[in-house]
Image 1: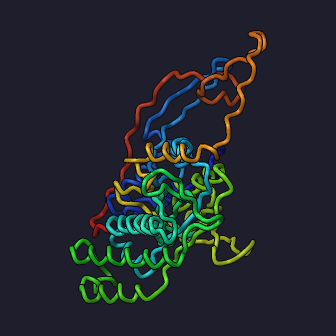
Image 2: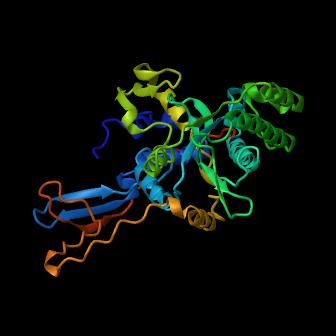
Image 3: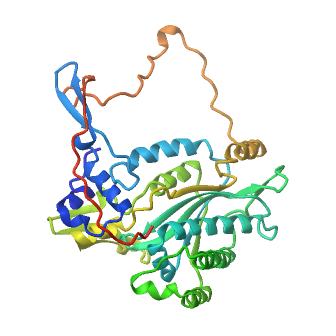
Amino acid sequence: MPRPAIEVADILRGLGPALRDGLSRDQHRAVNAILSCRTAALGGHVSRCEDCGTMDVAYNSCRNRHCPRCQAAASYEWLEARRRDLLPVAYYHVVFTLPAPLARVAFQNKRMVYDALFKAVSETLMTIGADPKHLGAKLGATLVLHTWGSAMTHHPHIHGVVPGGGLSPDGKRWVDCRRGFFLPVRVLSRLFRRLMCERLASLQAAGKLGFHGDLSPLADPAAFARLLKSQRRRDWVVYAKRPFAGPDQVLSYLARYTHRIAISNSRITAYDGQRVTFRVKDYRKEGETRYGVMTLAASEFARRFLQHVLPDGLHRIRHVGLLANTQRRAAIAQARSLLADRIPPPDPVPEPRPATEIPPLTPAPGPAPCACCGGRMILVERVTPAAQLKLRPQARMDTS
């Protein structure tokens, strides 16, 4: 795939030393990785074509989870592992969104509030799923945290991909959701609201939330309690989409959402050294009117992009219930045995052909062929990482 004409790294690099102002430690690390990705700073290797002698230098990638260049390979590896977990049932897409006033609290307390958001969503799904009035079974789900909208504004929400059913309490039956229907959205919304407010109240009471700037008054327990009371009175947005058409559509969805970052390089259309133009999508509109472009000053573009850098060690993809790492293998094996009649039979093994008709084995994946003649490229030298210019973060309040 050809390199995009303009990349996030070009914009960050163009800001020069000014970029370092106000960076947190995690943002500092992400910027260094993005600026170094596939450059001499990370080293690489030199290859030569066996036929025409053409030389090619390839530099190593940074593999940082916020780097626009590194998500395709990470997504592919992750999807191959998930392919083995798919069950022959309908899958549903659910979205849980944190209200804007609480999103501001999350922005200043990312580690604590994002973790609480995951736990509230997980408990909501497991509780409603286990209720005999709704399903009466143990669910499983893959949850993915996104913190942005199309314009890279702060908009924390969790996407969930959930099999349409679960194991009965005794584990001896598979219980299906009603056809075309997952769980009642209004019930999910109310429980999610209660659980999230309870978790936030507990964090504040334990002194685990920090507030600064215009949120400083919330350090007063009474003021924070008033905020939560106001949010308990409003409807919280929980969205459940119709079931996916099949396993391939589930994987396609996961490929789009699991390793997505705030903006991809392909969405950037123009950069003149001062201003950046990129494509946006307004989900409140319908049809072609929802697509447009936005232009920002390069410094504002960088600020919006970097506000979505997650605290180090915070997992943005989590598997819960039947799909939790501690029980996934056994739970999926049990579910497959109960759903055996829905699993299509494997393709018949073809009759063996005479040796003269056996096609040659497909060669193992290797380096890309020579761009000049298509010949085989061979490794001739490894490139040692060069000295790397690092931006030092300035002192600031940690919002992780």
